[in-house]
Image 1 (cartoon, one colour):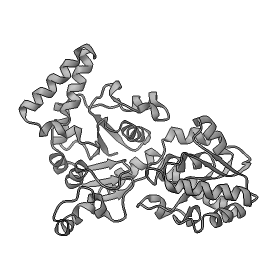
Image 2: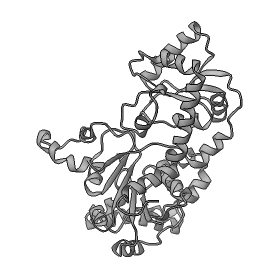
Image 3: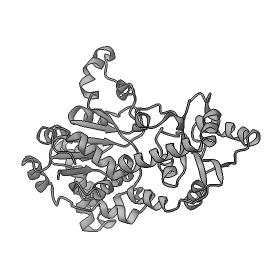
Image 4: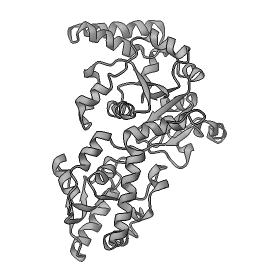
Length: 380
């Protein structure tokens, strides 16, 4: 059983929680976490399915101190390090001058009237981050960076992590890997681009996925009879969604299908109406991958999606029948085909359900990351 060190900051609390829960629900992984972070510093954790339980997962198997962490890394105690630290705050302390380090420490102690002494010390330890630089850790044990952000290009911190890690797993990974550098591209670009081939070869695509508990909770909400043919329930946060809504409004008039159009609903109402729907139109918003893809399958509905514009596991494994062209040329045609062919509809759903349960629950995503990173050693 591999021993994993999970280094996570609170820069993206929700995603940090997803990985912690994935580690906990995987029976094939032994893991420890660092650093200890006060509960009040996990901003946004209330957005996850079960905040109290997820917060408890972020407190499991904590390495007690920087000294213990240093000794374990130096002795090659771990087989792999998972790193989720969007803005590089776990390593920023090492890059400060001595004067700036003391200023930061004193700044944390000024919070004495707002925090308990115990939490002040936790904040100071969090600010100090890890005791080694990323390249030093990676020279001893392989580091796999987990990047759940939906930006196609990497910030400078991400570029630095890609340079010094062994593996880089990214959600919303562009097909053209050089685009990772596009917004902060080094100059001269024509020359530097050739030098980046080694680094972009470390990248692997990653799904957003769904929490294990949430998936099985929603699965219990499925209904024996679905009386809605097509559901479109989301805010118009992209022009593709606006266009789809216009098409569906016309289809609702011209076709015999029962189509329900709605804006955002309270989550329980959203789940109830989705469970009653044979097909849920699920279109990219800020990024291509979104929770609705997975929630629809959990509730027994087929997600009907715009064709992926990024390198995602969805476009390597799923039948084209559930995707429509981004030009909308086949939007109604594909919907009519799915709804008219019960066997095809059933075949697509069974495939999707198996794919989610085998590869896209958070525990399975974590296992996939670990397996890929340890591919030259023992797999789970």
